[in-house]
Image (cartoon, rainbow, N blue to C red):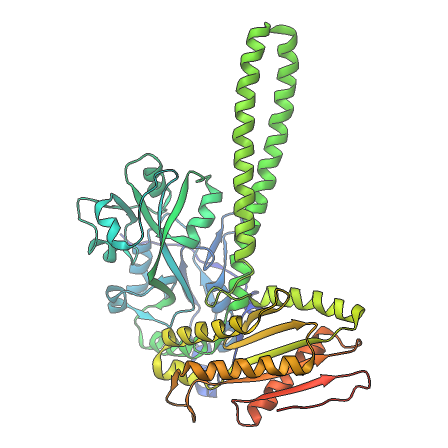
Length: 509
């Protein structure tokens, strides 16, 4: 049976959350070919933070939408996102494979899907999680532990084939549903012991549907899911996928990820506000009922109802405490970079503004260094992006181990760039710390065959502000300028400047 869906055009307004670490160029003829393509018919699934569907406005937002908007603007493409309907993921994949739709987002790679369409490179990594009812105390520390449990999964997801190699067929139940709610109801009612589901999407659903009696008991890190765009297998779309890959290879989506993962916290705020309004209404009604009971019900009946009301209040208070704990957890997570576990750019900018304002009052020195991994593109090109991610995590550990004070802050600045904020640190001490970082990265002895040195190295730009009068943006620009000077000097070195009362600059190697 064919599926006919009327498209809804969606304005591309969120491309500013994406940036390129280096430019991507196409010939005039290539751009003309892309612009001549008919509008892409896009199908999507409601999978925050990659794609979140707004039922009131029939629009999508998320990391995948930001990336698609950016590339579409760059190439002059037009697209229409088909509105959400009760259609399974398998049906939407079939629409792309048969040419009734042009592009699917977001989707993870499997050999079966790759045989019927064209995948781009990934733009977002996520993990599956094992979810159980609270209080079960299930000992799940690896996938092998699932073989003795009744396991539920949504039919058609990429991870289903992995589970079929681990869990006996009699214990694995695949739910053929257009949504995951039936899977979680089965878990709550004891039909299955655990559910395997995308961790990020479950976090949001937990607050949307009051799944507070469910919790994540294990995160499956050994099978990360790289989410990609999936296009129908025409020659034009093969060329278009190759163009997408050129952008994805040099694309920084950290701001988009921070924006849309923070959306989960906004959802919780809205949930708490709505719950508080309901509680106020319930409290008012309970107070009125209580006054009526004083006049019309015997003392014994009044006491019994009072005990029931106290029990309900304790339940409400327990839910409020749990919501507050979840909010605080998400608050901490929103300040971290998902790959390196360092502070992310948003949190770093907030702390930098605070420390800069304090420096303007106290006149104590404030040092800022920006480090960039040399020839990092060579690592990705030669060894692959997974090795590149391992290298970034190793450099992040070096940066974190190099600082010792609680007031210092190390962050992933973007892509392969890192930043270190050193309040109250003079230029000489900051220079010593920068040299320790350079030496420690050398000591990692990570190979980089395409680089001139043959191993991974780092360049650092350092600025120390010892007098007021300079803005935050100017301070960052000075550090960037010193990093550029280090790159221009051949990389694998440090360039620094000290900004004093007389506005003179002392540059060091």
